Length: 146
Image (cartoon, rainbow, N blue to C red; front, side, top):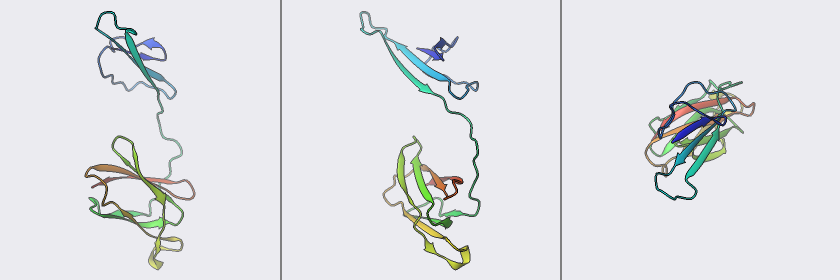
């Protein structure tokens, strides 16, 4: 194994995993795996990724409540804005649900806000990340357990 940063070998980074806190946005990190089998053609494989770090301009939607958590069959998002978007990701980053907020209006929550209901009965047990994006682009990110 040999890890590289922007095309340069990282000294001592010769194992199957590499950990660092010294990356910058746009860095290209590659792992080169060399075969130990004689006469292998090619004798190596390369996998690379471009690093994205940091969060900028993140504003949250503080007026929402998400329950029950842990959830069994139905997740309720209270105070959601009509027209907002909900995305739910599993822990390996796969999008498992996306959809607009179709709300049941509630006068007590304010105009244009209400309760959104998401059927989670088909979700596998585990931990998920819910992202709610309102019509102004503000985001709320929550951990959901099923």
